[in-house]
Image (cartoon, rainbow, N blue to C red):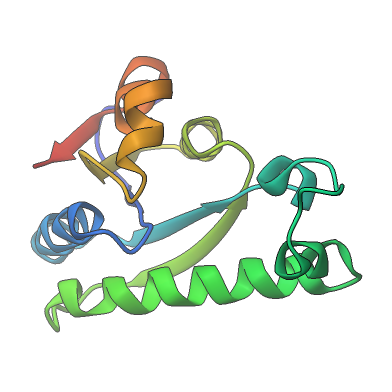
Length: 155
């Protein structure tokens, strides 16, 4: 593992906090001439997202268990998160790649970062799900604890 950043990873979810991280990362990437990856994490399966299909599930949720339904939902959610992040790039000259990861957000972010040499993670302090973060612990806190690379939290 190198301590010199070679790529900046920025998890995005469409939140204002993530967009602050994108803005900071874009500024740093442009000044340091580093590539940037916007990361969007989505559950691996519809069961991981909605639970087992059953009587309490809505008709809308059941459609995601049909062939192609869950993938369509994932692709639409990723496209929306990336679209919301683009204005924060502020027209800076930055090489940006959009990457969709599958799994539990903190684990997927850390695993992706660990696969790269010279990763620097810049992420927002809070995502879209404030109640879930309160109950389960925040993604940013878990990434800080488990990443084997530098992590910067944009407030």
